[in-house]
Image (cartoon, rainbow, N blue to C red; front, side, top):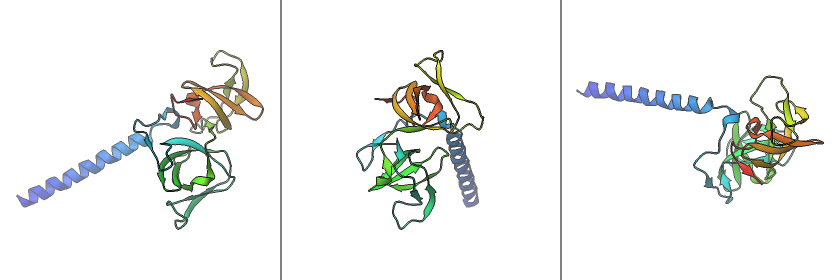
Length: 187
């Protein structure tokens, strides 16, 4: 009987591992444009909601493997204004996720509450995305923007965002941006 229990336990472990792998794979297959704010929003150490989007304040931001300067630098961002998602907080450190899904820890002073977004960074197609004059797909295009372009988010109504890139300002469908949640309203 003992060997039967060991066999059953081993199979349960395999089944549990397979279920966790399936769940993880399913989570990772959700494209960035479908990203909704998780239902379980909580307050972090800062008193702000977690998760939330912010942007990089500096042209050089070290991303560390853990929440202290004792942890090694995993990589370095070299462009101010890039949007990142804060997914956890520990004291003065913020665990962030970038548009490619990479995660690491950043000191809070290197982040800004200014909202920015990237246009469809998940696509490899080279097609232009219209920046509209109003919140209608039928409205005049003020500019044609390429995937990966960085811009400033001014407001969002849950479907459209008032967005600017350089001298161009207009409206873009919210689902085409990484840096705001689907359905999120910003004022």
